[in-house]
Image 1: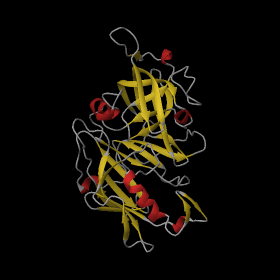
Image 2: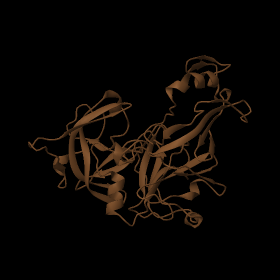
Image 3: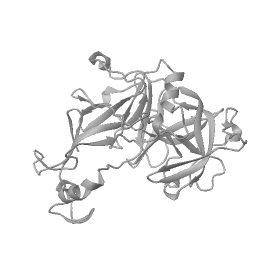
Image 4: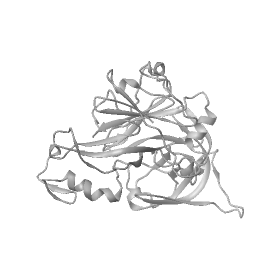
Length: 345
């Protein structure tokens, strides 16, 4: 994983099979070829198209950021295509969308498989539909496995194994997105194998073997809205004084890669001046995953009491509920990622 930081912005580049090492000359242009998926803060879905100097009408896609919490974009499914809004999730590997007739899918748009000529159910040896269940931190979804053609921007992807959802837990059914498109590794996949990234690489070998992700916390920034690039990147986001950081992706345990896992050398609570660490939640190092599907930060449970004590010291707080406190009353945090990156928060 490579990061470019500047002006309180972070742009992530994530590399997949095989890992590619950049030379400085490869970062010389501001916008590299690829499909850009832009994200704009809206209270309802937007059809506004974003353009950059290298975009054409088939490459740039509008996506929506709901409340800096869910970053959602268009996934085209079937023949002819039906558009659904999904979270492009680096914390999971499966693709699932609600099926027509789902009565436990809230307000979500659904996919009508009967209207697609490229849809096929996955059947067991006994001729019955193969069921699936995927559990997330927010709940579970259940349904049946199938194969279908997909498109993300100008890239079509054939023979994708995915889940047709017939049930969503209450919290998931309340989310703004319709489904999930996983961008993690095949070691996590329960349904989508090969993964979307593997199929993109196989079916579009000329596409750059990486993607970049920029999640803005400024919904009013129309010049640099949040964006996902497949096979490309946009350096104009970070400005002329950007600093480059690299941290390797680590495989833990046996078998295939699972998460976009990185090594954290320290998670520090800083003093009031921001110059000295007063508490380290990972004194012996710990591992973290880069997860675009969540807006939260997680630490080891053993470190939580100590971190909470330091963060709320001197304030009127009951656990995480504080009275009469402003943002500036809380200390800065500092993340140290291998090998030598220090990132303030």
